Length: 103
Image (cartoon, rainbow, N blue to C red; front, side, top):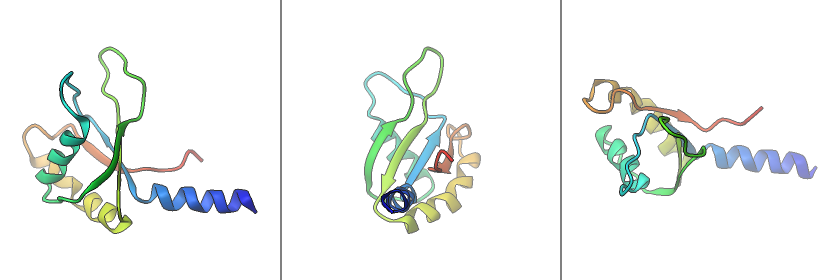
């Protein structure tokens, strides 16, 4: 029973998360401000709750960034608007996807 409850809780928490691929990291730059800039490009200014890179830092690689929003409705709106990034200079290599479970 606890496993089923845990799985349902994890699923509902993940439904509020998004993962961004292709963000170039610079030494002095805050990753959350970069995510906010990307969201502003697609006209979605919503408060970000948590923002962190997912993988360990390696030379010559770009780490994915996971961030959380306060509502899964905002997540769906951002995913629908994410295609607009393909048409924006400087944002063509950036992709936004939902946070999926490991199963």
